[in-house]
Length: 66
Image (cartoon, rainbow, N blue to C red; front, side, top):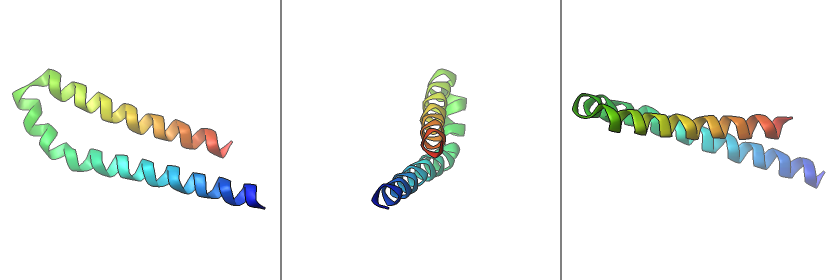
């Protein structure tokens, strides 16, 4: 029973982390638009880094559910 509870807690924490990263990405989108006009390379780097974080969280969450 304890192991099942631990798994649920881990999944819950990973879901919260994913939600936090997606929310941060949405919030940064407006500032990214301004940055995109100023410097394309900086914009692209930041966007790619944020997307990688979200992908990593999704993969981690998917692996935990298996």
